[in-house]
Amino acid sequence: MAILFSKLLLATDGSEHSVRSANYAVELAQQFHAKVDVVYVIDDKKSKSDVLHHVDKYDLKIERQEKIKPVLALLDKANITYEVHFTHGEPAPCIIDFAEKNESDCVIVGSRGRNKVQTMILGSVSHKVAKHAACPVLIIK
Image (cartoon, rainbow, N blue to C red; front, side, top):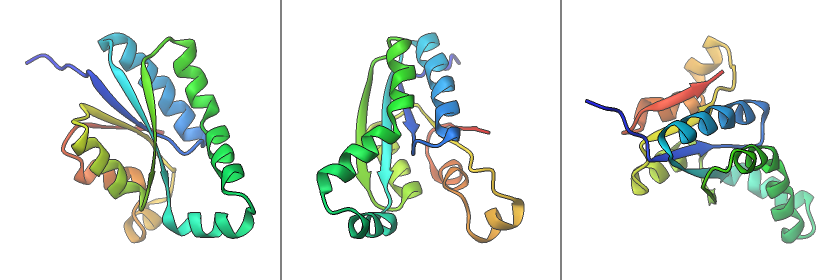
């Protein structure tokens, strides 16, 4: 059985981990000539706090777009076909739902590097995605 990835989901939050994840997404996309869906989940809990600290929703939108610029720059430089999606909700379920609805072949997500106790108690986004996604999940450390 040959593995083919034609639709990759790159979950990003603008962190260092997500930039490293983007490098892997570029490699996979180049190898398989795949399209990349870049998904940024706006956590409802953080969103309320952000709105309180920002006067203008437009400024908040610009700030979010700025966060993912390094990721998009990597995709642009490699001439990868991609589409950016901003979703609202709890990150892990949103990523899983997006992957299922869009028939993603692989989810690429950065690890937060939490210790074992925190992961057991709180769970991490990457751990939840790996546990519940229907497709393969590549977690980048």
